[in-house]
Picture 1 (cartoon, rainbow, N blue to C red):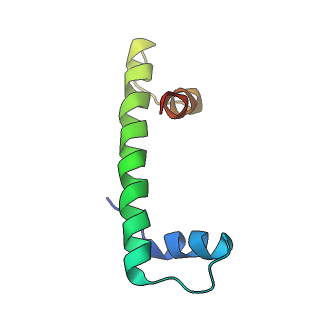
Picture 2 (picture 1 turned 90 degrees about the vertical axis):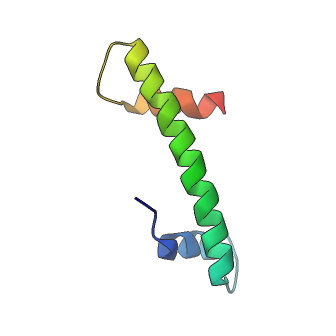
Length: 67
């Protein structure tokens, strides 16, 4: 599953960019997806340590702090 590039373009524009190339959107998209995957993997481990199958917000928060 991949994140649509349109929201990525909106994020860049909301940050102040006047125009955004498709290559820029795709590059940020690839980075965001890679980071999200790493966070998810770490969050899964936290849930497993807590003997849960459900990933909770606290697992995500802990995973982000570990980055």
